[in-house]
Every structure is written in C-alpha cells, then in structure tokens.
Image (cartoon, rainbow over all chains, first blue to last red; front, side, top):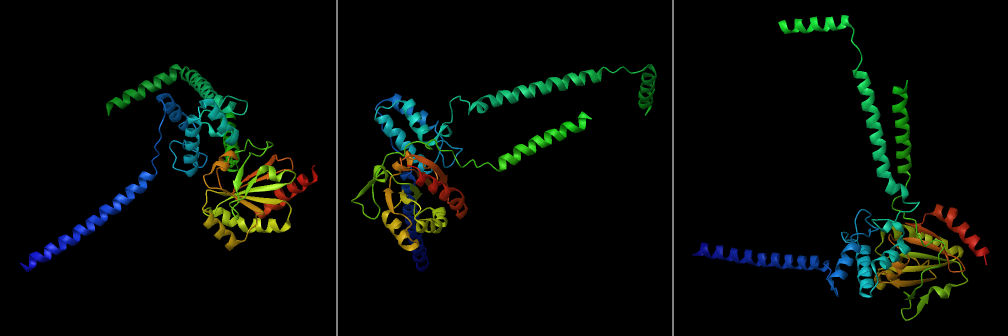
Length: 168
Length: 176
C-alpha cells in the first residue's frame, strides 16, 4: 500500500510538471503566433497583388530574401507598407516606385532594364555565348587532331603489338 | 606557347575579379536620395514628446541626421565619436531614435552622453522607410537648402569624421 502511494505521489508530480511543460509550450506557441500576420483583403486581386509584391521586393537587411520570406523587422515594416498602400488603392507600379524612390533598384528582384542593370540582364546570355564559342572551337580542334594520318610503318607496328597482346 | 599563356591570362583575369570582389561592400546600397530633398517628417521629440520637429524647422542650417537605437550594438561603438563631433559644433546633429522604447533611449543618452541637438522618435519605423533606412546606424548630411548630400551606412569612424564629414560640412556651411 505504502509503495503504491509513493508511485501515486510520483505520478502526480509528473503530471504537474507535464502541465508546466504544456503551459510552457502554449506560451511558446503564443510567441510564435505573434509573428504571424493577418491581412484582410477587399478582393482576391488585391491579395494577389500583395503576394506578388512581397515576393518581388528584396529585404535589405538579409539581402538574399524577399520581404515575404524574411523575418527581419524591416521586412515586416515593408510588408505593412505594401499592405497599407494597397488598401489606399495604389497600383503595383505605384508601390514599386515608392520602394525604388527610397531604396533604389536594388530593392526589386526584377530590376528594370537600364544602362546600369544591363550587364545583369545580358550577362548570362553573354556567358552562354562565350561558352558555346569555346565548345565549338574546342571540338573543332579535337576533330582535326583525330584525323592525323598514321604511316604504314606505324600501322604495321600497332598490328604486331596487338597480335602479341592476344597471345597472353 | 599559347598553351602556357592562356591559363596565365585566365588566372590573371580571375584574380583581378576576385580582388575587386573582395573590396566591394555589397551591404552598402547606394541611396537614391542623394541630391534629393530630405523626405518630409514631423515627429515628437524624444525629450519633449509634446513638441514636434519637422525638416522645415532646419531650413538654412547644415545638419546631420543620425539614425540610432538603444538596441543597436554598432550605435554603441559609434556613440563616443558622435559625442566628439558634437563638441566641435560643426553642424546640428539631429537623432532619429528608430524603433526604440523612449525609456530605453533616454536611459542610453543619460548613460553615454547626448551628442544630439534634438532627437525625434520613430517608433513604428515610418520615417525610417521614407529615408531608405535599412541598417542602423546611418548618418545623412543635409545642406542649407534641405537637400541630402551624403549618406553613410554603418558606424561612423574617427577617420570618416576627419576625411568625409568635417570637410563636407565645412563646404556646405560655406554655401548659401
């Protein structure tokens, strides 16, 4: 009987610590939930515009992330800005312009084609062309190297070596 | 001969590009606001929240606009340099207390000294967005016409003060 009560006591203690753990987890999840943003949109088009814009604008703190992906505070502020401007009836172009006026073309993941961004757009095509030309030149040179004539004497030697090899 | 020179040329080209890459600062984004009028603001003063300061109050003066926060570690290293700069009274220093708690900000100034002629509060970061702020601390230099002439991202060093800020301020003070 005594033993049982000890076990019971223990299980009670366990359950209180379990409750503590559950409470702790709930608090944690509450904190995690605080990071989720709820946005209400007047229509699906507006929501689509919001999703497009936030995934096309660069977070300037963690520069390889969009403001939709980033947890940085600035990204959250910029998402709020995008949302508010959409609520005010601003177009996507207006919002993109607002951002580039403040942060430059760098804020756009799809920067406009300009003299300054030209290399960015043409660069990959340029490198592809250089690669293709290099491959073309390389294969052509190899082909000419393969068609070297072998003298009759050498062919005779090759044949004799091959036949010798067969004997082993 | 070409067989030996070509890899050498390729190596040199690669080395040059890598050396240039090492000296780039991709975190420093050129501001489109240079030579543009300072974005408008009207914000409560940190020390006197009932009073407001706007950029028009600073017309006719050369001023620095320093973005800072008590949570910003690099601001702490920058702070003594700003204190020294403030003693020289070369220009007005306006602080933008960015996304900070007023109590924490006031405590910071009481502890480390106050280089600012005035600090304004930007608790929700909207003034920061208008000024294209992305990395605190940032420092702008605004001329007498209210035009932004220079932007510095990251903590200001004593070399920056001597080589960039003081000469630029002297030049702008001489302008009308």
